[in-house]
Amino acid sequence: MDIKQLIYLCNLERERHFGRAAEASFVSQPTLSMRLKNLEKELGVALINRGNNFEGFTAEGERVLAWAREIVSVYQGLKLEVESLKHGLNGTLVIGAVPQCSIMLAQLLKSISVKFPRLDFRVSVLSADQLLEALTAHTVDIGIGFFELQTLHELHFQSQPLEDSGVDLLFHPQHFPQLVGDTPLTLREVADLPLCLAEPSRYFRRYIDQNFRDAGLTLHTRLETSSLLQLLQGIFVGLGCGIFPRGNLLPEMTPQLQRRAIAIAPMTRHAAVVVAEPGRATPLAQHFFDAAQGWLLQSVTPGLPR
Image (cartoon, rainbow, N blue to C red; front, side, top):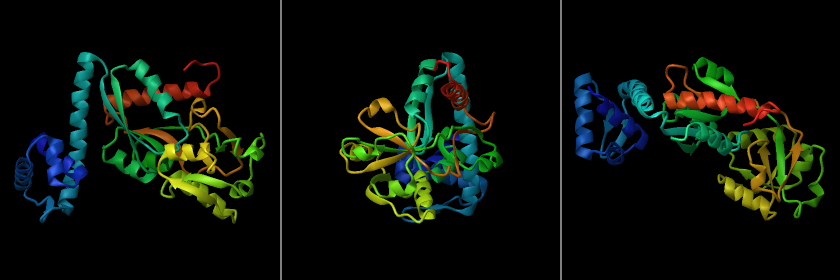
């Protein structure tokens, strides 16, 4: 058994296709298949359900795969550690992020890139449930989203909760002049408006829907999309108004749009930045997490420069 076989196994899980897994592993498909068959022979169990195409893993394969993820993650962390010792912190950090979370992610990444200029970022947009699975499977280094804090504790993740500053209605005053004001809007007032909302599979959308259902109200969703850009464009042209957690958007990017607080119950899940426990997090992930904690502290403490 060698580390390449375990990497091939992890790539096959991610790609769910022998050909694409071979490409991701930079080997031919026959080579990948042969190496995985050798691994099965050495372990004495079938790992993969084979037919004309990839048909998933056997029960034994799922158990081996869990170990493979852990070993590959440690191996990659070791390589990054050595590179960091030679050249300073560098590499690509994989971040899983939930849309409409109460953090200006670009500002955070900019702050950390100033401290670690050789650090690059790849951001994958995931649902809240997908994000927890990705953290557990080590397919992302950092998670930024909505979590049950008790679950994070039980799984031994490090977490830095984000401040829950409430929820805003985002609108263009040219199209909705009646909304200009300072007092929080009631749910009934919001229910009377056309809205541009994220798709229902997103946790923040489910939270919004549940609160209106509990109040006996139905939302008028004029535009529904998974694209944040399409949401903002719909709001800008007056197709409807948007609902966002405060702190999610950079106000400077939407100077013509206005915000007004909504009187709504807090979310049951907590927004947080999450990483594996100390000793299991990669050096890149741990340095990012430590720097993020410092940045978040400064962002809520008056008088401290970012």
